Length: 280
Image (tube, rainbow, N blue to C red; front, side, top):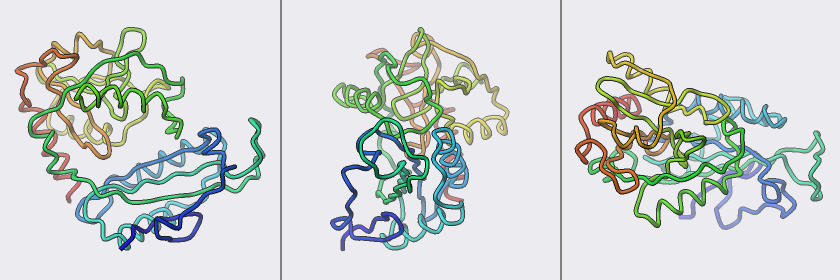
């Protein structure tokens, strides 16, 4: 049975889904996206993801075409129609269709698409062994707090990581780690959980926020500050978070071992805590 996707109000077989070539998402990457995880057929941290979607749309002057309740209904319908037990729901809103011109008509009707992707989130083998990362210059635009579909910088970074056998690329700007190609980066020093503070330089990660809350509840010290690749390599533990990686340990960076070179106890604990939260 074909995967069912959502396009502008209709649920269609994947093979029948089509968009005009004049869609500004295709021509200019003029749009916003969001991804929510699904565990046991249920959405994880979803309202926070939808709030971020709404915020990102407002920052580029696109009116959100759906209410929170309508988005949730769309997501749950896709989960049901595709019998999705574990994976993600991807949502994208572009400015709409018009003749190619940099300036835009504020009255355009947004284009909305959404689809599901099955993924092994909880029993990801890399979470057991830990993954590796590479570092590279952060060449992306200056409003990374907006979840834009313009992802060429991330595509090239993730491709470089994949070709190096790594799970992530750590982006570096002015000597400090900003974030991963598609994740938030954390280091652990003693009982301190360290991550970069929010600003226009990084995406306000939903899993990031949940992990910081869990860390504080478990009496860990949270520090939001800048750190370098060198400090990350020397840390006791390193991990990344995202909607679909949850909490992913990093055991080496640029070929250099982090800590013992194995998945550390605090990362194991935080991943287990987050999975409990996601599965509740």
